[in-house]
Amino acid sequence: MIRTERLALMPPEPRHIPALIRMLSDPEVMAQLVNNPTVESAEASLVKHDGYRADSIGFWAVEKDGVFAGFCGLKPAAADLPIAGELEIGWIFDKPFWGKGIAGEAARAVLDWAWANRAEPRVVAITSAGHEGSRRLMERIGMRHLPDMDFEHPLYAADDPMRQTVVYAVDRP
Image (cartoon, rainbow, N blue to C red; front, side):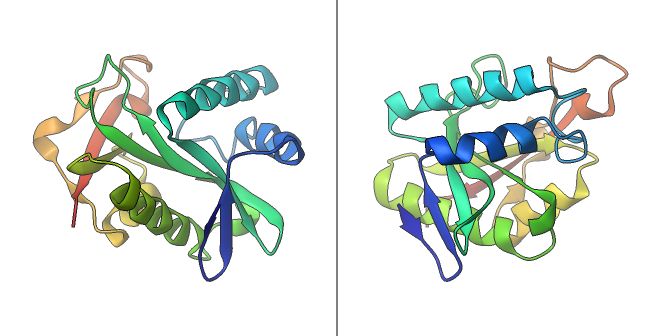
């Protein structure tokens, strides 16, 4: 478990699953990540994320005052992307926790954990070019935009605004 001033990050427990599925299937929460999210896509995402634990990484359930707030952690970058081979950080937070600094606090805790427990020289993050909130968070946690690595994400159609993907990175301190 990782603790910060306001948060606890832990591997998802059975008690977190209903809130995770609700959040990961919420069209507003997932608007910049998944087109038409469903309970089935949420369940498939959780299975995929659970598989990262074999590499001693993964996303943690984030709680504030014992209440589920979101999902934040590390995963290997997908093999079919320009960031393949990199350690990627990501986050998804439920609407009641937006704009309260929770995502930044959790992401900084995950980066601290990465520097203490992993050997990678940097951590990367990606988002759609138009996702300004995520991009601002990346900058607040010390990441810098790597425009030479930006790419068109193969999971999205050519006319989908999420196809244009930006890459950010933070080097090991």
